[in-house]
Amino acid sequence: MINKCYYFKIEELVHPDILGAIGEELCWSLIPDVVKMFLDTTRFEYGHPISINTYLWGGAFINSGVRRKDDTKYAKGSRHKNWNTFDLKDGEGDIKRLHDFIRENSVRLNIERIEKFEWTKTWAHCEFASKMIERTIWFQP
Image 1 (cartoon, rainbow, N blue to C red):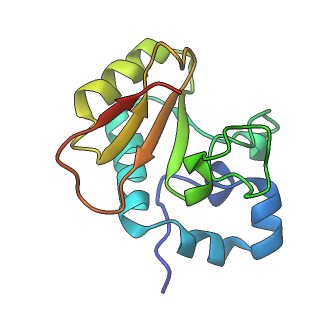
Image 2 (image 1 turned 180 degrees about the vertical axis):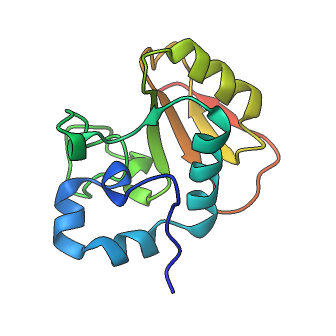
């Protein structure tokens, strides 16, 4: 049996081209279980709407979760192609609240790497680890 997120639909996490090409079950299986667990924990504990990809509801975001391997629009070595990196956005536009929550809880939420918030003014680029971590690395693109 494949574990799925409780608080996220697969469309929120995976680019529509990937989902269409390989299907929902394989997409769920490619996201590490620990990553799914901490994504759910983040959304549940934040207590405020969090969005990633929004295309399912007519929104513009399709590249905030898992991206296509052949995508050349973003950084060549983007970890979004590794099934563990997601750009989280506050669903009500309160990015300061989301940044503060992630800053205070990053290790506990198993976020291995975070793009420095001065570079992500409207989102939080979070790279969830596949194994438990002891510290979070903050990086500049």
